[in-house]
Image 1 (cartoon, rainbow over the protein chains, first blue to last red):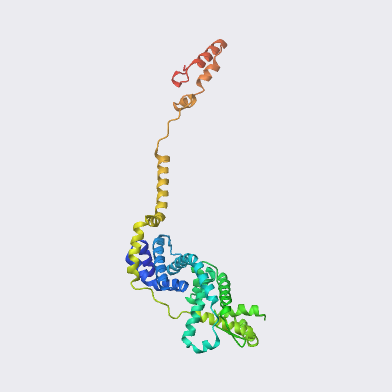
Image 2: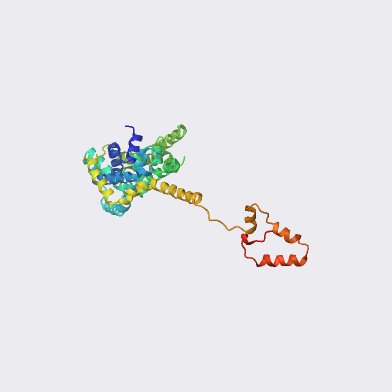
Length: 191
Length: 164
C-alpha cells in the first residue's frame, strides 16, 4: 500500500496501517535518537515515545510535507527535550574527561589500529554531547545520519543559508572542543 | 587568500559545495600553508569519526512493545484523544452555532409593532388626513375649536377617532 494511503488510514484510526508506518520508519527514527544520545536503551525509549507523539498528532498532519520529514521533526523535538534535561550531566562528563592525561605517543604506537579508531570515535561523540543543542543536532543530521541540506531545511524548518552557517559553526565548535586532545607530532596535529 | 576565508572554503568542500574556481583557490592555498593543511586533516579526522558505519538496531519486537504503550496512553490520557477529534469538532460546532442563529433570525416571528393612528388608517385604506381636512374645512371658528377640543380629549385609539 502506498504511504499516503497508509497515513490516511492511520488518521482514520486504522491500527494496522499505523503499524506498517512504524515498521517502515522505526530504524531511521531509532538511528536519529541514537546518534544524539549514543545509548541503545535510551534511543529505543525515545523512538517509541516519538511514535506515540506522532500517533496523537496525526489529526494535525495535512500532507503539506512528506510523512517521514514530519516524523523526523517530531523525533528531533522530542530528543531535544530529553537532551535539555541531560545537558548538565554531559558537561560533567566532559570536565572529567579533560582531567585525563593526554595520550602519549608511544602508547598510541602500541595500540592496534581498530582500538585507536574506536577511541577516537568515542572521544568525538563525547565532545559532541557537550556542544549546544542546535549545533549538536545539525551535526547529527548531516555528518552522522547523512541527511542532505534540503532534507535538513525541511526537518528543522530553517533556510538553506541557516543550515550552511549553523553547520560550519558547529564543526568549528567541535574542533575547538577537541583541541586539547590533539597530539603534537613535530608540528602536525593528529588525534 | 587569507586563512580565515580558506577555513570557510574548507568546510564547504566537505559538502562538495565549492565552485570550480573556489576549489582551485583552496588547492593552491593548501599547497603553501602548513597550518591550513593541518586544519584540513583535523576536520577530516573529526568527520570520519562522526560517520557511523555500524548503527545499532532497535531492540526486537518494536511494534509489539509500542502497541500496549499506545493503548495505555489512550486509556489514561483522554485529553490526547480529545485533541485528536477537536480538530473536526471545532468547525462542526461553529457550523451548528451559525445554523442556530440563522433559524432564530429567519423563522421566529417578529412581535407586532404598535401602529400609529396614521399608519392604521393607511393600512385600512383610509385617508389619515381626512379628519384634519374636515377640521380645517370647517367654516365656523367656534365649531372648529369644539371639534379640536373633542379630538384632543379622545383616547389614542384609532377606533375612537372622529369620522364623519
